[in-house]
Image (tube, rainbow, N blue to C red; front, side, top):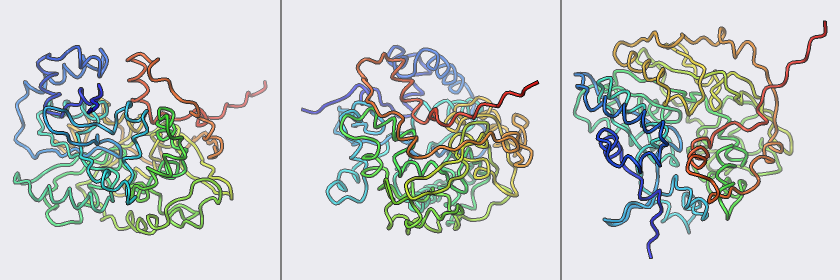
Length: 434
């Protein structure tokens, strides 16, 4: 018997979601998905977008970040697709192992996975806000497990096949690396503007943690999974994704792309994937006046690391968005803008959407402050602390009882998978004696 979960039944593509939100149909079901407040916001945005006349300007391609595209298995109609990423009922049952790449036993199943639209919670509001501003928005979904070079080639091929003339790009997180790599390929001269939204231009230390089993997302997923712990998921699943290795900061010392420099204890990276990833970020084409960046800051972020025989030790400060350090997101020689915002919240921010509308229209914005690494308060007063892999392994070691969570608590859990662990908290300031 084919099992269809509630999340399979409620998975809708962007066009279906926008139509339902604009008309008010399926209100009860969508309120269960988004919650009452988010549903009200999205419905209002969808109604505005439906009434707005489309501008006579280049269409906007929107690229989500890593893990930002839903993945699953196609099924014969009238059955809905089998949503795997991200369906908590499948995670509970241990099915995340079906995401693994490169395993001869699992490869056929992994290769059958199809993209099923961007994660609505993260990207739907941005799509609707841009459409309500009159832009034609094209969501470019992709299989974020794959090599970024291959994904860039796929994106460039799609742009070449687009017969509308010039295009513009808004890319969040890892999607910005795909877009930038694609700029070196034939046909990308048609790009009028590329806006990087929290993009790790020089990599992210979160990739190190994902391979070590200490990344918050991996640990929270493991707390749901009845079959696997975080170390098993990191070793069997996330450690098989070429994209994660290409996100490793290449200029870091020790050399993170050399397996010999990693701690001898705990999980170690795949040496072949490390070698294949070397040189990716260095090979990105230089920026030009078409580029600009929007950067989040003021969140507890890993900004450096050291290594011992047993562990990585991560330096934490406010100089980043919680995932991407300021220095990595900053584009030298380009227009950079900043706001105090967490990484996954950047696409959901109304202020960011307003700035994007101005940047897409005229190339500059007054909605955000201009960014400067030297002048950023978080950079000049970092409140630095240090946390080790061993300390992070003490977080989320128990299992979550999903059945006991009410709908609001379930939404909260899934929406905050990337929330920083308590060990990232800034050190307390010492009291000054009179």
